[in-house]
Image (cartoon, rainbow, N blue to C red; front, side):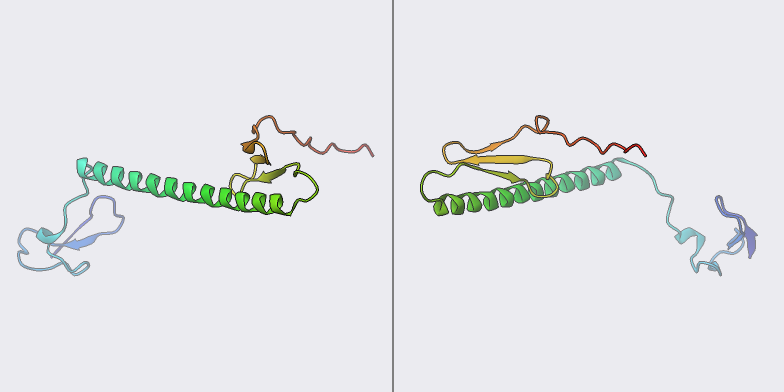
Amino acid sequence: MGYRIQAGRDTPHQTLQSDDVGETCTECGFRESDLPGPYTFGWRAVRRFAVALLLGIAVGVFAGEFWIADDEATMRETAEAYGAVATGGTPQGLTFTRAWPATFSKVDWTPSGGFVPQEIFAQERIPPPRPSNP
């Protein structure tokens, strides 16, 4: 048995020399001929990454569409209940704030026009607080 420092290691790894055929390494328990080869980057890895990426995007799109549909169903139920409860004339309208993560967006509802999204950048900005003079 001999000692040899493998690339990338600080300490020696007891490995087999050419005269030690049939013996196993006392550190890792494998024969040198049985050790796996180094990792290679090829088209197989690219294909796996592409499949994982496409599956991740598809799951994200599906979850987003489900979230939006659920939010719109909640708004529709609220608007129908509001319209049914209103008496003595027509209801004026409602403004909904979208569910997380789109809480920056608002949707207006009127009995005649239905749901109409507000423009995101046309909404009023809240000015930042200004320091008071002591």
